[in-house]
Image 1 (cartoon, rainbow, N blue to C red):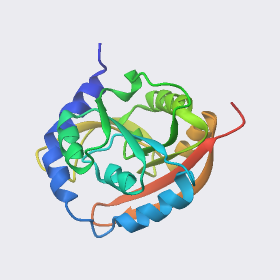
Image 2 (cartoon, helix red, strand yellow):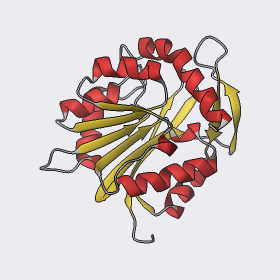
Image 3 (cartoon, rainbow, N blue to C red):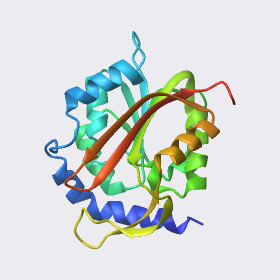
Image 4 (cartoon, one colour):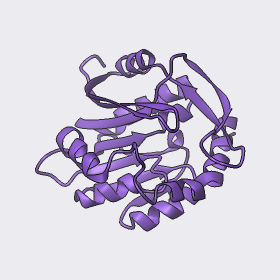
Length: 219
């Protein structure tokens, strides 16, 4: 039986997909531009001199997939919301999509050169986030890297919260990580941090933490 938080989150993302797509028609005031993202990805995530096979977990309406396509990557995506997939396919028609709870996805080991997971890990309870990291480590090639970003908070907590930056009283499950907590979790699951970036959205009162990680030697 599907966990309650997965059901709640699927309904939530289907519900606010239209708003999400509209908000991302243009790059926000505090968002990284496409060119800034390309620089980060090419310098820190993607392999040189090869056509990278990239998995995006939770692509939303497909902005990053389109950027990966422009960087000549082969792209696959796992997304919980069918409504989000509809939008993402418009932006990234060459991507292969799977609508599934990522924890139930069946993928080959050592398959991907890079995995991108933006604003996703906080949609899972901490112990399921741990399971997700274990899957990522399995799916990633030995010399591959993963980019993960999430909001960070002063206090660690998790539960069901109303999403304040969208209309419609939309409730979803949210894990609020502190920075030391997320760093510790990654290291416990055998990842080594190779890149760190902090950004903020004052208008939405959000602080973001981006890590790029590779497989460490302790697992």
